[in-house]
Amino acid sequence: MKATDDTGPAFELLAAAEPSPLIYAVPHAGRTVPASARARLQATEATVHSLEDPLVDDLVAGAGAWGASRLINRTARAFVDVNRDPGERDPRLSSDERGRDTPRTRAGLGVVPRLGGDGRVLYRGRLDPEEIEARIAAVHVPYHAALAELMQAMRARFGRAVLIDWHSMPSAAAEAEGRRGGLSPDIVLGDRFGRSADPDIPALIRQVFEARGRRVLMNRPFAGGHTTQVWARPEDGFHALQVEINRGLYLDEATLSPTSGLATLKADIEVVSRALVAALRSKKAAPESAA
Image (cartoon, rainbow, N blue to C red):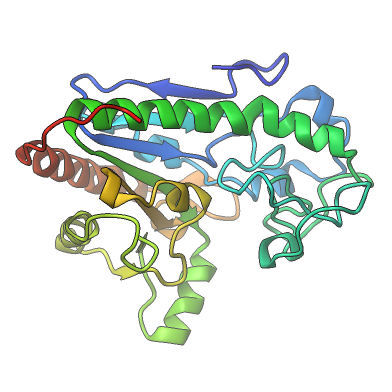
């Protein structure tokens, strides 16, 4: 896996003990900001970390024992966001003022974020387009190449590949959804409104989480991001689902320190992983050649 410069690998690909069609990705686990970019930051560490999905890589760490391969991004989202379309560049950040005016870039959350999760400015001034391109080339491109290779290999071996893209959401987002719709979720499953995966996959995940006492919503307020959209091809044997976890279940959101809920949630995810792998292995689809 390609290094971002002097900071080690941009991401890690961790093979399962006995592989299955199941792949777990954690795109916002990274905490490493390369030294060349750190010099451009005006933000505090708290603002940089506010973009992360803290401890989500730890929550899924045991899944390899049950058959899930894992792709863990180690580069901070403040440097580049691998769960964005690489063309979603913020014209308010680039020195040539070119890019896309989208809801995400207006919020400062393009492929290279302009703002932290707390709404504070990340960088001193604008970035040259060449620097934005270099960040995409250093992390985004190889991350998605590694994911594509893994997805194709699992489909070739098992007849299908199932990607679960793991994220966390602030408890405030869950509470806001509760005010809108009457249920404040612990878990949000995003399948792009039924388009990204065989419906049996989110149905099973929902069933297991709810049996463990978790409140689960579908596609509200998150239906799936860039990675889910890319692999939303169930007709071709590629299935993708986004999972958002309420941080209040396992984290002190002020200090980002784990609470006693971490161990319980890890146990829940282990049960989900075991159930998913068992269900996927029970379906004997004929392997296809990788495209």
